[in-house]
Image (cartoon, rainbow, N blue to C red):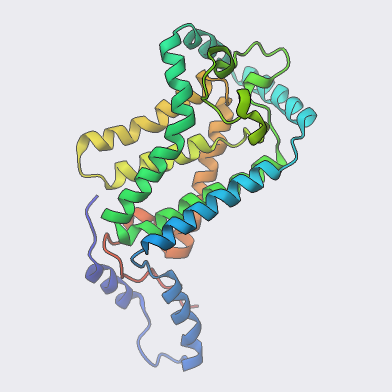
Length: 288
């Protein structure tokens, strides 16, 4: 994807803007002008971004864990979802879980993957965007934040037990069996996290955001390939460790679609089509 310059972007805005004195008052221009300033991608400030990300994740975790653990309803929903997947012919999570659990080295690695890369890779991509694509950073960050925010509605409206907690599901909790710390919702750490917030999967929402960002903006071919493989590997991990159903991943993708739609509405363009350098205005709303 070629980089757009600020000059090219501003040229598009001038062409789209109405000519001066086109029958509108000064007051009529104030609203669009202020809105345009708010929507203008700016160079992010390091300490503000660190504080914003820390506060946002703390708030997300607080709200997620404050959602009542509706165990009975979560288990009923899990049974319903499992029946639905069987009806659709995609209920193979138990087979994947048991097959990969037999390879101890692999499943232990997946446990640690589940616990760490979810945060490490996402933060790494945010830092890379901040340094290399400042003009696209705020829009991409908005897409990620909006994705995470809408996921909270899913946790509240549709409490869902992960496969490993189903009654009679036959799934293996790989963290418990192999005594690793591969999940905040297993073992000694289970009291620190809402165990019935499996739908949607933010492991998928965040990893797909990372993958699309790397594929769209990275210039090194192998990095772009890794961007495509990362969400696929994450999907394998969340299923193999019995932390999610396939359809939880679909929920994560829908949340990401909402996130990108939010960024598109606010900035007038998808994050990856904005100029690489900061300072170009976003698209102004069309005149009626």
